[in-house]
Length: 243
Length: 324
Ligand code: SF4
Ligand code: SF4
Image 1: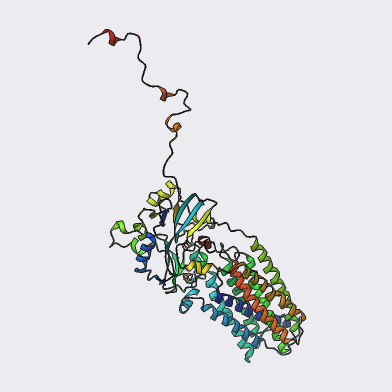
Image 2 (image 1 turned 90 degrees about the horizontal axis):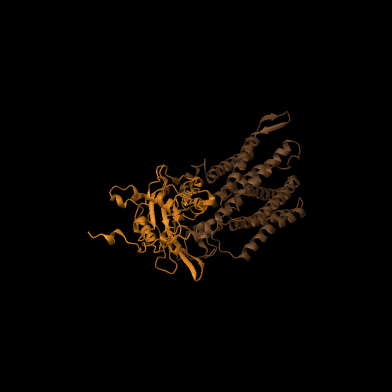
């Protein structure tokens, strides 16, 4: 079974919001759109987004790190938002694991948004239906696009390649490898939703080199100490013969 | 959670309507079994019609909650998995059966269809009413399970939610029945008021128990598990939206602790304590006191349902530290 998902590397995300704007651009003009913008140029702009980047400061000054945290629907493998939907508008595609909303069936009761612990769903105030990340399903299978572009638009737009797209059930995919190599984790695993999207933790990118890394202090023979042999005083064959 | 007004009206109106029907229908059975004396003037039909009205008002209120009310019929589709869908089926079913009961009672159609154990005559209305009782029980469970089934809304995720909805609905229904009995002088006042006092007391006990339970609840989630950064000091510096979002509007109530405390005390007093006192001092002729008891109790239960929303903490609020 396929489970398409995103793996988001918090170590490389710089919080530039390129994924946010490209997502809005693609989806507001695509089959999921339009995504409403309210007061776009006024004091309190608000609207529908599938993806948002939040920022957190970790630690106490001056020892702090800023973590930029992109947040969208995680396409849970056991999505609590789906069974509660009374109309069947919310569903999980068996063939690729993407969780979608059928905007023609949705009655806008908001019940699914109560059932998502991550706050990934938003009512579109104009269309009055529930919206959320579609994983750009209208790109993934579009054969008119070059193969390299059949990916969520956020993945293509990320300048630091912090977003990796792939099938997390295929151990050979980039996404699966990133999860297993870099300690990928799920958000709020305690609720048993098994989010398909994973996050890669902050990690050290440099290494410190200490003296004992170069010379083995615990080696009784101290092999590294053996330098070139000292000159001997005895006559050698070289001294008594001439070639 | 932010209180949803239409849902508050829906659940309280439907609860009172269901309680009212149960009050009159149970009285009818006690008469059949010879425990109560027959009513001096039987207006079970009118009472059922009133109960129908309450349910209908609740249904109307619920439409205001929907973004697309014209598609509401679709909501019956997923009854296998969704409690909301089940409610959408149970509510019209209960309304239909209650209406049927009222029509049979009010028209001349009601006649005895069989005699149980030689002395208990069962009429058409008794049969239809029994169906209504089943639908009402199903409706109580469905309505409450909509909230109780959401496992990470820990304040709701408890059998107490179902019990509370049931007891509060029945309590307000029996209080209304007492008012009607004092108005019509049908001789069943003592039964209604006794049950109203008992149910209100029981509802108070379990609502209070729920308050105590919720006070000690700790969510297994934290900001650390929400973003997966395991450091004790994390401060949010941007929430991903300038003028708020659906997430900040729908899940964060924004009321201060004093308002919340006032609401809690208010619903305990108005919904339970004052009606109990009023019912205690009322007698068969105190129409006004009983009516007042119902009105105050209904207002109190509105406040209770409001508080029920305020009380529930949604884990998504962890992502909105700056304002929650
Ligand atoms: S993140 Fe929320 S909306 Fe997305 S699948 Fe999981 S529960 Fe559903
Ligand atoms: S808002 Fe739409 S998708 Fe969500 S539960 Fe209601 S009908 Fe289903």
